Amino acid sequence: MLPNNTEIDEAAIRTYRLERVRQGLRASDFAGLLLFDPVNIRYATGSRNMQVWTMHNPCRYLFIATDGPVILFELGSARHLAKHLTTIDEIRPAWAWDYMIVGERNEEMAGNWAGEIVDLIQQHGGGNRRIAIDRADWLPVMWLQHHQLQVADGKPLMERARAVKSAEEITALQISFQACADSIAVLRKEAKPGMSESAALGMLLKEAITRGGEYPETRLLSSGPRTNPWFQETADRVMQDGDLLSFDTDLIGRWGFYTDISRSWVIGDRKPTDEQKRLYNMARQQLEHNTALLRPGMSFREMSAKSWPVPAAYLANRYADIAHGVGLGVEYPLIWYQEDEAYGMYDGVFQENMVVCVESYIGAVGGREGVKLEQPVLITADGPQLFCDCPYEDY
Image (cartoon, rainbow, N blue to C red; front, top):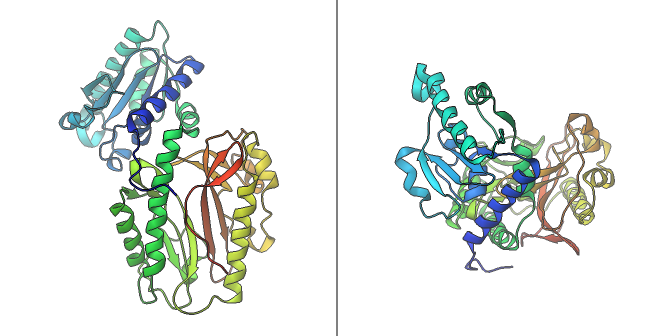
């Protein structure tokens, strides 16, 4: 376990990430890339500004020329926030086209926005008119196409760039995960019968933010009969002695890393019932079996085929995936159950220095409770390496 005061070279992380993005741009023959997703902007440059709010308000964006400048278009009153970042060559005021902001002038403002982007492509594209965008509203895409730019999906490029971590990223990610594990340890000690689910979640968030965390992406902490089926959001239910408490942290932690750990245990002084033990041990068996499979060179479909077979009684309530990448969020790759192949299963190969979270949920259809477990794992040349000190229950 690394000490929390381990120094991290954040500038080295930013430099590595930007070069990963540019390698993808060159390989795909794009003149440049436009990023609107604040998580992608943060990955490419280290810049952040009201990260949750800007996820649903398109008020800032980033232009990366494949062979040219990186230009951040920022809220006019917030341009000072990124001035220290060497990954950004220029900061300009952002155009707004959202109806809430500019009303009936939305098409006019989108046209102004597109004109500036077209100028940048002409200046730095070397005649290449292909541009990638991670996500965008209809109006700006329409205007780019009006100017005869070839607009392509930039999400594959960003997902592949984010998938493989540098040594410095791995160190920082491990510290961030350990801070999450330390927050869980406090919850494990302090959560008692008579406490509401909301109070328990609030305790977990307080501990995480105290340790440098930022915000939760979900509210997935439940107890007793609300643990089955999964994905019931935290409520004001008062936890009872002998209830199972199950949760998924889904926390944005230190340095913006997505610290994703799930654990379950029995609340209070009662010993776990035989059924609770059975559920827990099946979930742990699934997690450990699937974790042991991970190695560089294994294909995604191979992992799915060799994954722990979920018993029929629990298959309908299975979790959404077997495992997924993790970095600044849930990332590529996502490993599907074979039963869900028609909905989007794809292939690929695990690489060294990927970090993935292995998932398990065991709860029978019509059963009273369910167990949620999830473990972050680093893929190394020597096999899987558990990524934090967060113990399991000895049931």
